[in-house]
Image 1 (tube, rainbow, N blue to C red):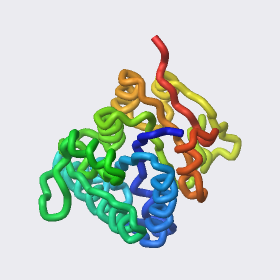
Image 2: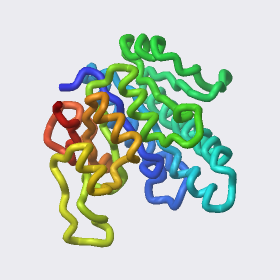
Image 3: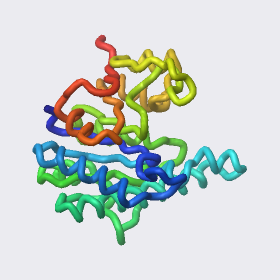
Image 4: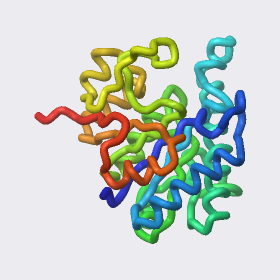
Length: 238
């Protein structure tokens, strides 16, 4: 079983069956799964996306300045992170929201050593605000935070998809599910797991990820225990 993990939750996973926004019941279900993993004694960091509220690339497509649109996306991740924190606290799971954007009234500033101390004390750390800089995705933020806190693995929880496929399973019923991949294969095959910057960082820092469907109850615990689930993406040995 992993001792310290970084859980990446897509913003889309928080909207449930809705078109956009945050679905409280869905957030509660996710929090229950996190609580189960926390009760195993696992130290948990979380990075939440913001795609259910806003995407920087959407704003850019509408003619907005890319940096401005990305900052709006960072604010969306903060909203999502606070929703997850509230759900965890209601279940009795101690948690801390730590933001890359200064916002002292609602979240602590991200400080690496403080984050590690929170984890050691059994608190779930929710890293929000991306990296505080435009042009970087939450995937990249996820990899950097995982590396900084010394996580053993990144658990990439997806919405309604079992792992990494060779094509879109929504449009191709014969799409093949990969059980194992390398980051080089992700880049060469242009698989939409994470952006190229994040994939390269994972490979360079020898960080593996597990991509799985978080809508299936108990999947987070299964991933934490190292059970075969979804797709394992490994770095290449030198």
